[in-house]
Length: 241
Length: 290
Image (cartoon, rainbow over all chains, first blue to last red; front, side):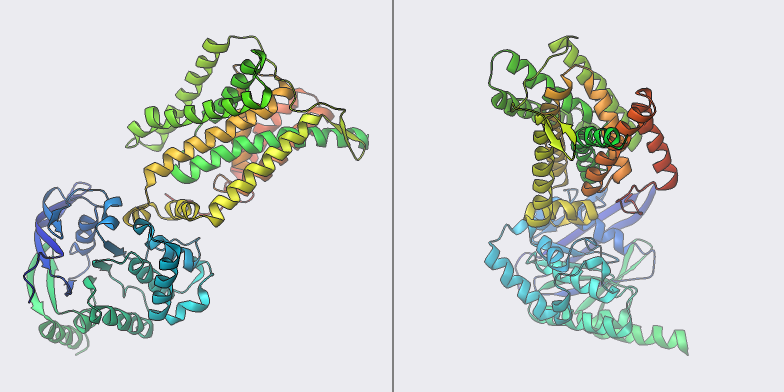
């Protein structure tokens, strides 16, 4: 196990949305090359936690370190320069832009040369071959699953050291979900550090080494992927047994 | 009768071309910031007055025009930095009132600097009137239409074929997510004011030889530009072009056929009708972003 600085360290953050405190003293760590899940029911505060890490919903207190630098409260514009990329809840693609333009926007902060960008585009199309024929299609006209591929591809164009995914399975058909998680598994194998927010325990267990359990705005436990898979089975049998 | 109507249409095309430029400024700022800048017409006044004053002082017309556009652009940038950006946490209505205040302030500044006397700017080129299917256009009309062509072509190329233009469209489509990819929303907001002011200033410069320049011309031009932008769709640059020409032609026809009193009134009638019947405008999107 590496002894280097964690890619992400969240230390005791509390976040308020409107007048409601959503996060209470949340701490977690993601090491380089890890794939970590945050699981929990609706309203647990998972998306707010992602918002706090990205700067979209700045925390009221606590520290967030990315590669050792405290970034708590810094604006989202700084996120990309710290090599963190977000796949937001409900995809958040740039609907009027083409697929290719969406992907290129992922690389905005890199200021890379055109040849390099083109090579990266081909990498993304290699990971998601289904997108190739939609290269110049308006992204808003694609199906939910394809839009999810665009959102993941766009984040990859940022060449992130940390990839944040917020509920990537939400609202997708099982087959499409499986395809997209297959791509995420390949990314994890390549060594991309991933923090995955997910309600679907079975999918999370498939690609994550360990998971934090969230409830009512607090981290209430951690599980290994085997424990998570067992929990998923229990939840499944509980729901159907 | 037909010849007379055609002459009104031609006059409307020229006026409409100016309205389209002002409307383009409204649309640019609205798209990037979500704000309706009611000071837009004053940028045209600054362009017209600066160029006319400089040319009256003996400067060649094209040089005076270039400096006037520069002055308008700087004014636009300062408006953003001094009045809009410090109030960015304010609600939409407050920001609209700030732009109304800017409008009054810039008009007052125009009065202070140039006084109440109209200034004139020589036409960019001489020669006889241009005949189009029996109707006549002043030579300056060609400059007005050429300016429209160049401005809208430049905007199209920027938004469709440049990386920065694509980034602006991304920022318009989904501001928070665009920001997480490092797309600088505030920088774009600043440049939208500069560009809108430059385009407005250019409109003022090219119209000055036709209408002459006065310190209060911005109010009328601004309102007409606003109506044209709403008519075409506040989020559509092609809509600004269409809205400008439609408004210009309808105004001139109403003024000619009914009475000149209708010329300005008809614009507001159109505004009410559009807001009631088709609030998104002719070419705008039905769903607006929050």
